[in-house]
Image (cartoon, rainbow, N blue to C red; front, side):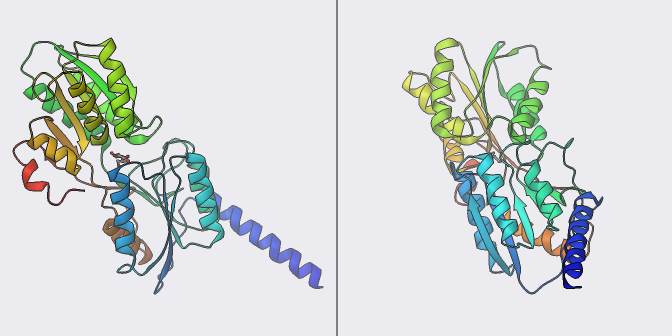
Length: 324
Ligand code: GZL
């Protein structure tokens, strides 16, 4: 009799897990006094990442989170393994910034199959393979296509020459911000025939790689007069490379970027950078608020969009104090 009871319990669990992964809805989140929350960070290779992780840790106590935060040191495979470990530890909810759009899909599906609701923060996954409102609850983040478009608008409006020679420093290959900031900028800048993108290469959102890539591209394209970086860290690296080569960023080369870090606002203030479109890393409070709404039974919109300001010489100095 006992053996039959064990077998049927195991069968029931297997059916529930399968049903969980097959159901159209993401798993619910039961309201509790305290929640075991997983935050699987991808890396800490720049101020943006460090600020995001701090934002989650600073929110934990006021949000009644027992927070498990991991750092995958730039490896999507390790990020998947970190999620596996959180599932095994029985987290109630997962906040995941997927380093790249495709490799993290299995982690999202595993969390769902384990009955754990997932919120994607600051980056998304390939929507053809995993859907908001089905595989995960929602994507909390900026409109990266619009960010790229707004940078291009600023270039079109402020570039006074009749021949814009553009070098583009791309973010992490396969990441949603890199893909979308590229398409948003490239499509918009193509509308003005003064501009040509002569080279576009990844600097992996890192200052040092941004500098190295700029040094190389400067050799091949000494006539460059506009640099579009997908994030401020690479833009600062490019400024270093250009100055080492005797160029005058902000004077003979226009530098445009995205994020709104302190160093970028300072560079704008110093006349070395023209514009940076904000991409806020402070996701902790928003994660807290959206999770509470979900736990109370609310249906969450598939994209909780973060609004971004634009920083130029008109307002950069006023915002340095609050920057990261
Ligand atoms: C944007 C985020 C990007 C930042 C970079 O939401 O994914 O990753 O723009 C960071 O600075 O590395």
